[in-house]
Structures are given as C-alpha cells and as structure tokens.
Length: 262
Image (tube, rainbow, N blue to C red):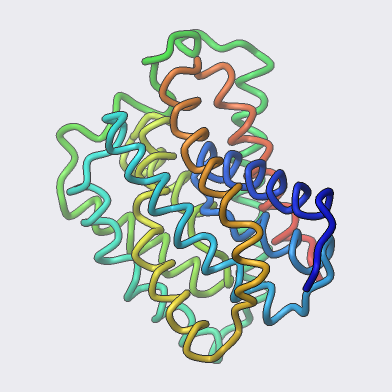
C-alpha cells in the first residue's frame, strides 16, 4: 500500500492523539483505535479490533511503565488487580451466553456515564481540594488497603468487562476510586498498567487468528508510542482540575456509547 505523505502524517497524528488521551484517562485505547481504524480509515471491523488490540498492548505497556517511573503506580498493586481481572474477564465472557448482555451494557454504561458526568460536574464546580498537582480525587489513595480488596476490585472490573465486551479500563478507573479510594491520578495510572498483561494476551490471540493488519499497525504505532509517553507526563505534572474533565469526558462518552448502542 503506497501512501501519500499527508496520509502517513494523518496516521501518525491519530496515533499520538488517541494514545495520549487513552493514557491520560486509563481506558487503554481500544475505544479510540477501533473507531479510528473502522469508521475513519475504512478497515474491516475484525481487522480493526485485532489491530487495535495490538496497538493497545504497546500503548499500555509503555504508558504503564512511564507511570511507574513517575511513581504514580505501584507494580504490586497493578499485579494484584490484574491477577484477578484476567480470569474474571474470561468468566464474564463465558457467562454472556447465559445472560442478557444488553441489560448489563445499559446498567454498566449508565454507571460509567454517571461517574464521568460527576467528574465533569466537579470540574465545573471547581471543588475544593482539586487544585494541586498532588491533591486527591475519590479518597486519600490506596495506602493501607488490603490485598484482598485490590483482588476484589480487579475481579469485579474484569467480570463486568467480560460481560460487556469492553477493554476494562473504563470500568476499572471508577472501581479503583470508589472501592479502593484511590485518587484519580493513581487510578488512571494503575488502570493503564493493569490492562497491559491482558492486552498482550488478546494481541497474541489476534496474531494467531490472523486478524491484525500489520501495515496499519506500523503506521499508527509510532504516533501511539509518542502519545503513550506524553499522557503520563501530563498526568504527573498537571493539576487535577485539568485531569478531571479529560477523564470525565472520556468515561461519559464510553458510558453513553455502551448504554445507548443498539
């Protein structure tokens, strides 16, 4: 496939933008890359999903490690959450055959949209405690929280992700802040790193089933790598008054899409 210079630049910029927002909001990136590949660039849906997973594996890996470097996530916390999230996600996918997934999508979508709208409302209100770069959002952090509670958070997020077909990040950020009391920055960072192992597994499956367009991956990945470095740096240095609306808008969009899709 021979591309013009402006087309190559478009792929690069789309990769940068999608990965930056994904790592800033902790959603992984599939909610951006699948529509970009399928709706905007015209790739078949099965290749769009597979290629997106392969890109997300890179984005969450680099983004997660960047968050570790910024000291916004403890690898042990992410490992505990991931250890329960991966098998529970498989369980949720298996249970879909015995449940009405549409009801689950509406309920979960409404919850995610509500959480996103709540963050936006807090941003507009300029709530106390949201100004400083180190201020919290949703509690004082995960210090002192038991390992069992972190495993529970991962299991809950994974189960819902498996039932709804989402990547898990949009579920995990609200769960981490609500159940564990993590502040918003740490929740985003932990979510990004936690998604990485599952993304690698999913990408490997898509590679085995030959549902990755490697040409598209090669065009989008360089920009995505840049975005995966930008996002964590912005989150680490920005005030919560800037981070909240980014996360809020992303989760609101994901939640409404999940709840209203037909």
